[in-house]
Image (cartoon, rainbow, N blue to C red; front, side, top):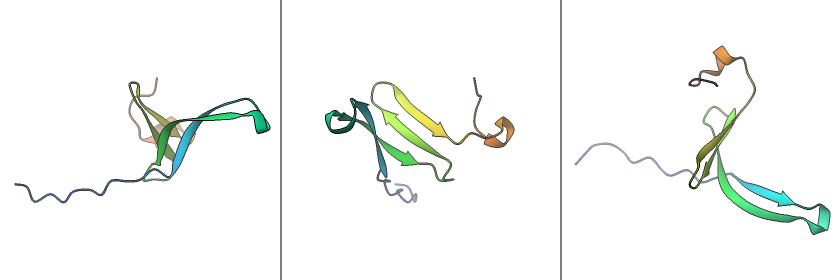
Length: 70
């Protein structure tokens, strides 16, 4: 038994869609939920069978503080 407190699961605040067509004829297909980063400068989009897509604000590489950028 551990003394760790379980983190409450975050609920998504947005959803990612694939949209085809325009206006009244458009079709919106939901792809994945979208979770904001704690720092408010990006989003995590978990996509089944692929992994996750991370969307971040454009910043200077050194100040971004993330892992290796390719």
